[in-house]
Length: 272
Image (tube, rainbow, N blue to C red; front, side, top):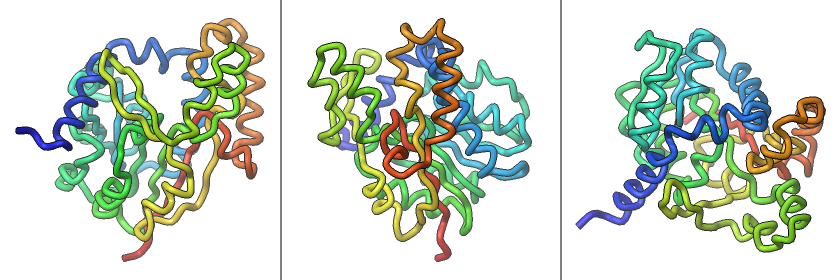
């Protein structure tokens, strides 16, 4: 009989296998997806200077890994989904295996990446960690992989997204407007149901201590709306540019920084 953990990992991997080939069309290449990703890229490039050796969690189709590798970083990119890894490899613009390597490793078992370490830093972009029930174990694994002083950046769905609340209230869907508030829900991905968690910033900081210290937090998608609003924003380029400008201006202000579609948390690895 499979263990509960193995079943959970298998379900999640299968779910994302089912959307791997359409993921870029549904999010990465959309106007909203690009606007949100640009804001994360700014922080990644500042946190990880050229020459850094970086571990990426839930790499998806490899867009972030490719950016970093082409900019002179060395990246080991991991994902639980075999199909996501396949799409990433086939679409990669970086063919030097010394600069970019893809591995099928789930967030729950990051210890399997130990042979590729140690790393100067690590990151998880766009909600991969919202599918993990035990963030403490992820933090423990990262503590064994990232050198003291190294940076870890985590982009997660936030507990409260003001744009989402307003959108669904205006469309007469009050239950969806508050779906994140309980901290947990169930989503259907690729025809499979998976659990999704919405930890607060304080909870994530608690899970990552004492190995990591939170040094900054900012909203991603504060004024830029969630991806399901794409059909209403696709041809409103000027409006989206203004919303992205407002995001950059206000994203790290108190209160605002926890009210976006995502929150980007930056940690530093403490000395043992």
